[in-house]
Image (cartoon, rainbow, N blue to C red; front, side):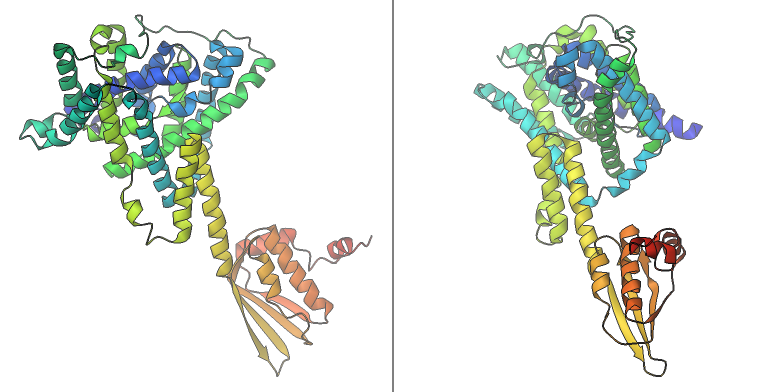
Length: 496
């Protein structure tokens, strides 16, 4: 454990520090923008990004992942801030953190297994589109200088790594920010800068207990918002952790990540910050800039605070063109370009899931809603496919006047009607065997279907027996089946 901790913190010092500086600079305009979305002062988002980045560096389960104030959580706060004010937002942030810690202890992260590759691809592609779309306002109604600087920034980002020696040492996004800032400052180019985004704070954050009455009325006000923030925050954080796992070919501790996100949000709320979660765009910037360990997130948080409080005059002159170039690079790197070619080869169902996820996320700007849509549609397709693989083979033994039905496949709510229809209820026969060695009964709908089959066959005078039940199916039938319980059958038929 000590070796792992040492590797997380000290295994990539230079790369983590340089990447953290890039992330810190890129966090500033986003934190301000997210504060504006939520309807609060810019310092609320900046303080939140500092607190969450620093705390998650220590408590999180995914080294190298960046968490801060995000659009996904900011969108959920608008109504609360408008109707009840900032203090209720701080209370909701703290409560959301507590709920995330509880989710960690309840192992709710295991529900991530329901997210298929198609949903994940759709999530990434939609996020790439949203990141690119978010840059468009910076490229509209501007002079040609903005386009030229953005193009130059992209050129530096993609070409600098080919420079001998230093190209492999220094992260190209950081060189892009420094180069364009120096050029704009000394050449006097009139373009939009970070200073134009909003007023930066000039004091350090202090401990602030939310100034709200601690009663049931307050709880009922903030609880719905806290639940939404906790769910969306964990979903985006765990999805981002999966992406960074693949990019770095390493594993993360999802349970620890849930608890870490909770602690980070509590810390944010107690210093006057809003709730946040993992940021896939900033996390990819971090990884592509060479960040791999916890030191990168810690550096990002500390440098962010130093920049906005002590070096704000320097930070204000950074041109937005440099940050737009970085975010365009992120959107290009996030989009799964192979998924376009795979549209011709992937199953129709997988394509439908991916495209529906993209459409819902882009249309609603709600990552969680898009992912839930993809999971739902994928589940429906899976249920349909499983029901098609269920069939019954029938054989007749004339010597014993016995008909044997061999059931193969999964019997559940979507295949139960097909299961019932595959039996012949009009055949005059003495004995029927239903062999389910190769079948499994999953739910009470499947049990009800078996009850109907057995009762219908017995009504025609056949002696029906069931063989081959596996342990799970037998347990389910013992609890819910009625075909061998005369008193239950009598209730169903209207007896007393």
